[in-house]
Image (tube, rainbow, N blue to C red; front, top):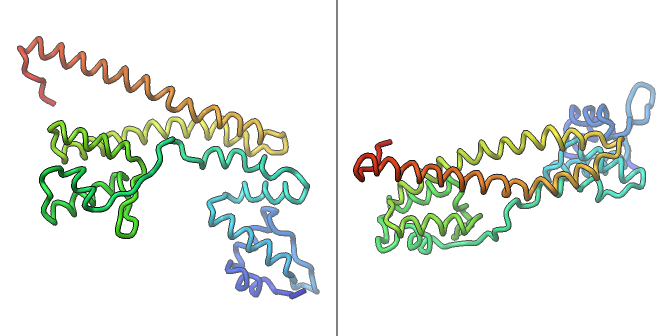
Length: 249
């Protein structure tokens, strides 16, 4: 079995001496064997470091990695530890992503106009910024075809594309605030419980997380519908009072 000093181990694993010491402090990596005052590491340390690196690149936190390693070493079901992580990293929408070519995108958002090159470039850039499309080689990935379809329907109804994109940006920002409310709730009530693995909270946290997911849509949809209804009614009332002229904003 090969032997490494800490700097040699760091180079072999593609890590740093600082990271190795941090992993040891967190209990992710067992201490080296001492030879006098020099720490000697072996291939088992190297394999563990490479595993930690792979898990980090997949997006796992050090806390989750420690739980996975502990579960594996003690014979627990790793699936239980992954429960919460899987629940939260799965897509939160049942929409199936699609793809479009540049020509299809132009026909969708600039129907009947074709569009000059500068205008097309501007529309593409803005759509990418809003997350409506993502460059994917010579095509574009569409995370939510329903959103793109909704925009196309508004344009077809006579609303200028720039106004649609501006509204989409404001709605996205509003939804980010709403998402923050739920994330704060999850952080307080789920993630902190999940950290208490010794108390057996992992399974409970995963179950709570699964319950939270559908509640997002169940809560947001009625609030949005009620808000839109209230706004529309207020607009109609104002038009009646002003003789049909829409209020200025």
